[in-house]
Amino acid sequence: MVAIENLDIRTVTLGINIGSCSTADPVQTAENVRQKIVREGKGLSEAADRIESRYGIPIVNRRISVSPVGEMIGPAVREDPEVGIRVARAMDNAARELDVDFIGGYSALVDKGMTRASKNLLNTIPEALASTDRVCSSVEVASTRSGINMDAVKESGEIVRETALKTEEDGGIGCAKLGFFSNAPPDNPFMPGAMHGPGNEESSISVAISGPGVVRSVVETTDGEFDKLSEAIKKTSFKMTRAGELIGRKVAEQLGVKFNIVDLSLAPTPAEGDSVALILERMGIDGCGAPGSTAALAMLTDAVKKGGMMATANVGGLSGSFIPVTEDSGMARAVEQGSMNIEKLEAMSSVCSVGLDMVPIPGDTEPETISAVIADECSIGVMNNKTTGIRLIPVPGKQAGESVEFGGLLGESTIMEISEYKSSKFVRRGGRIPAPIHSLKN
Image (cartoon, rainbow, N blue to C red; front, side, top):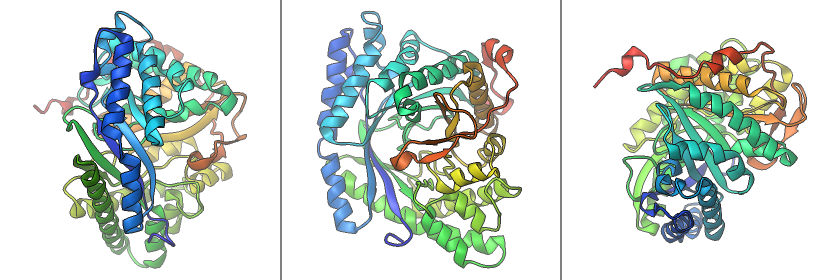
């Protein structure tokens, strides 16, 4: 599974609560954040290296997530409206000192409303991402219990557009570090949505497995009806999850912290064969996005979850099937050949556990249109009581049908077409789309 089918641990993520770092002094608050991250994160990369060497399973990324910054900077905002940027740079410095790949948690939870601190954080996201290398940001703008905060959604489109412009020289790459969510999980180890949310330990280790190549091999060698195929995928997911929990527990043991969760998500890479889209095609679909793709993805996601749930009692994060456009070579090929469009991608996101992920769109897309796409995707999460995430990348100077290449794990793709019809009046209504009735369960 490791040598031939690309099984790996996508990330070992150390979550850290930074709530105690808050003071009324912006400079001291930022320094407190840096010091706590360095203190808690010391040895993470070395521990991951040792466990990787001992067990022979690659660990692709070492990451840190912190408790949402938007919940922590309140007192300092009165003294310095740019305290968020100070904290982001402190996080970046700590990540560089610890030699981790990314650090998440520059986040705000605004599904029901915005405090002065969370409003401040939203305003600083474009500059924070443009002036740091490893910081990732996320915003929860909707939830099943609260509905959709359309004021925050409206601002989200503007944030995406401004972030793209501030990182224009790199093709708008700052937007790859920015996600918007409905029902954001508090223990997500994947970037950019990673955060150490409410209810977690002071610090803990979470892991995310990745095995599209392994599952593809199972699909290719399993003939017969879907119930037989589902059973084969479940057995494979069980094995992958066992391996993931073993690695996570061993790293946690080395650091002297609690083990938190295993994220069961199939996370593709641009490497040929390491693709969720290719799994669907091996089931018998000519091109990912063709009729039958949503049903195939639903079956795949369900089988992966069932197998993983039998392997561990510590399931969390997103736990589903990632279908990013640029990061999945099969998905990028489907966009290029025309079998996949953004409307079909949205439909498929209703049965996976992520959403519209790493979707390159024309650079001149209006902020209100971006906001409307975010609202559409959030509504799927709100109505179905599931997590959905949105990572859109307006590529400056590029139009639909042109290609863009980000490099590394971020991959490449053809830029997807967005409807020419506008939704500006809808977005400008503001307020909150109320929660659906099934949220009243308490």
